[in-house]
Image 1 (cartoon, rainbow, N blue to C red):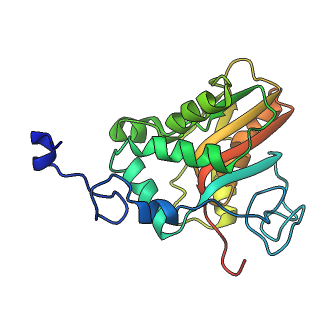
Image 2 (tube, rainbow, N blue to C red):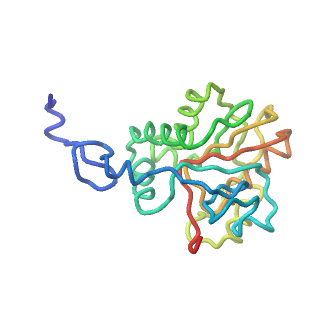
Image 3 (cartoon, helix red, strand yellow):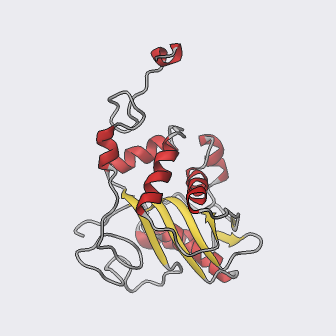
Length: 224
């Protein structure tokens, strides 16, 4: 039954703008899980199973593994934009379900979150990474701890090269409080891995023995 508010503000798919659901069945199917084979280390889809792929081979990586639920393609990007920039918090439950279905529960002690920029979080009104971490913690029956803090505000990452991203985030994070030995580090999007690596490095310096990165979406390199 329609409520008066539904007539004034009809629900439309946040991705395609059609239908009468926040996420229509077509767009939900398009957000299908990243299928194996995957790189054992960084989680990018590969032609065959490999321990290190062309994307992460030869790099010093502080995290043990990285896994994501969906590709950061046109559909994934529209989903994240609506969830993150347009403030459609209800999309968070879809993100949590998709990640919990696609990513096996890691053998860890707790989850923590890549800390968002305070000013941007205040402007958006919420943190997508924190929302995702809470949903995964409930699904995996694990606690969420605040193990990281930002110690400086880096330049915006958008538009920077891979090398510039790594340099930009060097020293941007530090551990906060007691750090569990085995952690899942949660963020919304894995782009080049620079943020995940910088955050995992800070956790490893202060006591974490292993850090597994889990994100909702990830950018896929061309020609994979």
